[in-house]
Amino acid sequence: MEFSRSLAKHGIRITFVNTEHIQKQIMDALATKDECDEITGVVADHILGWTMEIAEQKGMRRAAFCDSAAAQLALRSNIQKLIDEGIIDNDGEIIHYQLLKAMRNSNKETDVSFITNHACRKHCNLGWDFIGNKTMQKIFFESTVRNKRLLNLSDWLLCNSAYDLEPAAFDFDPKIIPIGPLSVSNQLGDSVGSFWSEDLTYLNWLDRQPPQSVIYAAFGSTTIFDRIQFHELAMGLELSNRPFFLVVRPDIKGINEAYPEGFLDRVASCGYIINWAPQQKVLGHPSIACFMSHCGWNSTMEGIIAQDEIKSKVLDNGRHKANAMDLKEKAMNSIKEGGGSCNDFNNFVEWLKA
Image 1 (cartoon, rainbow, N blue to C red):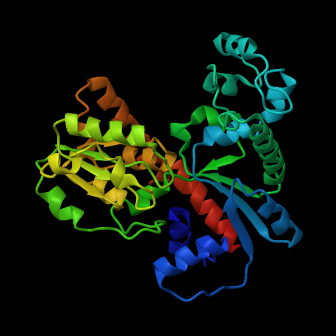
Image 2 (tube, rainbow, N blue to C red):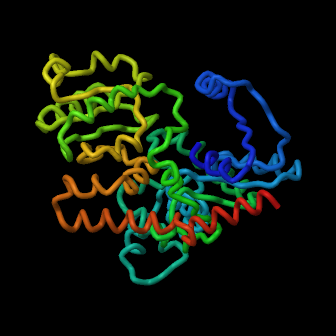
């Protein structure tokens, strides 16, 4: 949604194509009529490679967009190299972990050096090997391979990242074009992309908290907790003895029963629990001390570019603070006028308009 908003600011007309379920949610959220312009090009999520095939058949311009890390794209685009090196089999199963480890520890540069440097542990987290069900793993791996083949039909492969944040990934696969972080352009603006209504009463609560005091805990739009995990999270926040701001999505069933007994009463004076909130505005509030996240890519980007307050609060370790400020500087430099991501995005817009 941030990507669409950025395109719209440059005069690009956007028409969304969704499943019926998602379309209904969007229309209900926007309370607007369902209108459609003539389609001249297709911009699709990178996991929907089949859209590139259809767009090519229709003679349309084609771009794939990845809202996660470039490292994922670089990995998936080089599956065949892993197979050729004997690291994984044709079902995506790791068959030579020791070779993978040896290649990582070696100083010798190979075609898969980037992959071995980023995926060397017992469960390598290659993107398809985390399911635990071998049948499903095979299906997911085959889908990944097929999707990569179809992505080759795209004219552009865009990524919500910046070159200086992932130089190895972008060097490894130069076809991936960084245009992010996109959320910078809307850092304190209206939230976009959420189907849930925002409870703005949180601002009054945050305004009453001392500066640099509140733990902000939010875990994205899809993360699932089991009862034990949620119980431990709640207890941890309580035992921190700090004010906390906890986002608990309204679609999590039975969540009220998951709180420890008496928890809501005990934390009534120091905790604020809400269904959904505009994350960038929360991160920019002076009372926020730290961000407890599921480490999703978009949340990571928003944490990096948050206002300076969050960098100077609970980051007592000088090295951590320096690293945080370095990441923010790299991200901000990439999207300012003349920055790499800014130039790439403008080039893409000009291509669309040509």
